[in-house]
Image (cartoon, helix red, strand yellow):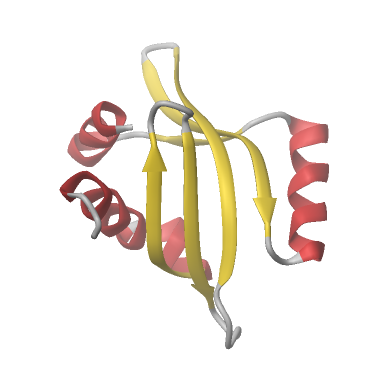
Length: 109
């Protein structure tokens, strides 16, 4: 059974423009001790959900908080390769934690 924290984060993710652009988060497990997220998402145009294991950190730059994806293991090989290349070339993928929801998420993660 999902914890309240996990349900809140999944709901917030599904409301974000970034997630809505690509699909919907179906399930989410967060391990704050290891800073790992396990996610199942159904992408637009796909019939089967993808599974991903993300290692993350919450960082702060110039007074702004960010959710940064440090590494990703993804069940679609081609997407795994795209993620690995992007992380290799550009470093962590950072999502700003803005507004009230961002403040709540930064405390929960």
